Image 1: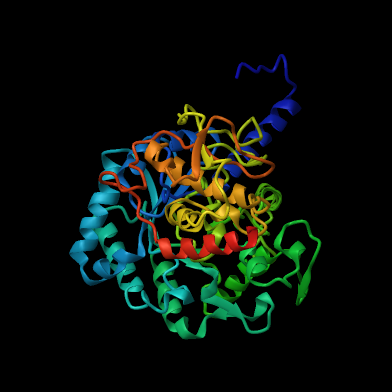
Image 2 (image 1 turned 135 degrees about the vertical axis):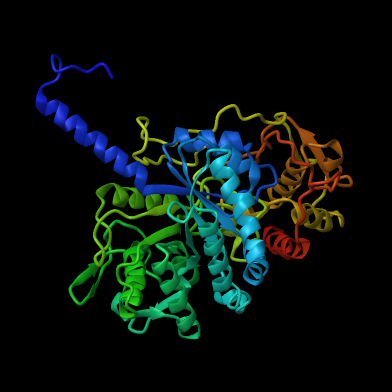
Length: 490
């Protein structure tokens, strides 16, 4: 850097060295999830550049997409590659299938493409109670077969296996962390998995979401969801000022009680959504994520386990094609919008800018929108079916109560639905031909917190189904949703 002892005293150099050490520790301590369930995903090379520009040195994937992995080649970014739940049965029943998967999705990328794969995530929250036990019999055998395949490939000292689990695999009998143990219906299975991870040097990966506590319980103390110390509980002298620490240590108690108190833990997902619910907004997301990053920077750990946390923020970019079964917020977890633009100020402590760095060289479609014609009537019988059709393909999750577009009037709701359908179909003229209802305009209809988006240019086919690769949606859920907000607006 051209700094010499003639300019800096020894004390300055020591201080600078400590600053460098702290920065390296910060970078190594935080990763991010990269999901790709989007109708118009950014190019993989653009995303990898985003990761590097923002100082992320670790990324967690939900599959083994070849384009994503190739883009990560020789990037210096450590990778956790994923195996979707729908592949567990095949991998559980066949060692050969596991060996083939490892060869194609791990060995090849490590040896030929220079991808720094450190973990294979076998399944994703396979024991969620909402999955009704669908993967109870296949997760452990798949884990075992993948581990055997990694050993056979000669990668076992470098690549470790894990299973990302939701925090619902454990609970507390006393509502305090010290009452923690694994869920009774899967207790023995969890012990088998934990033993296997411990024997093979794999970490316990857990997804912790304080937002969900606030979402499912209107009486949950809001301050306890954040890191501001506004609420606290005392558990035998251990003071918990936020639900993350309490949840994390409930897991630690479960591990300790069953003889695995030293097992390493990775927080596989943690974050806060910005839309789709009254508690999902930019202010709360910034407050939570900055609070968590400050915790990472301090390196304090939790009351039961001191030291730096190993964690992956959830998530990098919004995904507008995700299922909204968990809630309308599910498409809005990103630190960045769909186009790679930062949502709010966030200091990750990983770059000199102390703020999020936007994606580079993103190309947009023309500055035009599809809206409800001023001459169209709200009483037109085509309004309801047209909006329902539009939202069965488009993303209307911003229109709900408490969401960013929740204060629109009826015309605004209709225009938003028409425009999102139009944008998702790459501004095709035929996508703005709702009978006597719609018109294309060059005047941005965005207002207040509600932004009518302009789609980015990609190679993705339109949602109309014109050509291979069109994104498929489940219309019924969206139709019911749109009727609900229309009834409110009208």
